[in-house]
Length: 321
Image (cartoon, rainbow, N blue to C red; front, side):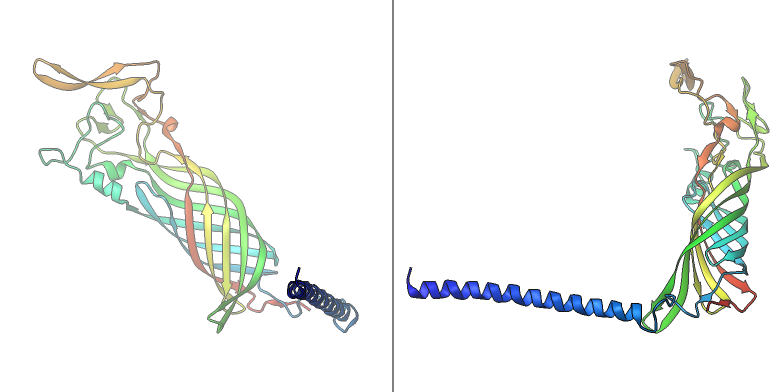
């Protein structure tokens, strides 16, 4: 090995040693500074001091009340616009008990509107057929056939584990908190009346030819509720809240015949030049069972979002020491 190669090898080794030594020095200095800072915190004038002083307690020992505006999600047949109010008593900054109530205004979805406007090949409004009655009551009756939510009234316990500040464009600073809630209550809705077709051509007040009228009955059912929410405080007594909620319950959303096990099929039959649908037994099931009943109800997750304004009373919050 030449002297030049040996020199280059030694220089490379020396560079590695210098790099390792520099890294060690930096590490030691950093550790020393950290230790010194910790000693100041432990032994200086801030030793034993709380993490926050003069904390504004927006919730503790205060009532929170305000209007709420909501909307249910994933609606099949009817949109549900919720108008209501919320009342909470905040026992601690992290715990509250309260209630929320909504009155619901309904509007048909595109699906319901499409079915209600459906026409046969002659241009007339569609009517039930022997194969789909009593599930279908005709275009003129469909909007009345489907269920309508009318109200939701709930009690709940809230836990507020999150608290902080929100900065907007480094100019506007808002206090915010995040909460989870759990509770229960009732849902008020209108559902198609129960009826049985039997062997006839009618089911309750509705006839196979589309004549008659669909009757909805007012019903109340229990539910449990849970969800998450956030509140942003504009000052010490007013804020804006947002909530996502689930309040599941069972209902027959479409007013259709859903009960029974598969077993009947409809075949297109032609006799003497007349074509018609004929039910043919293919198994041991009894679907459709020809009834509109409690057995036709299915679970609805009843997801909703809501936004509202919250007012806190007394107007002056508690200030921590």
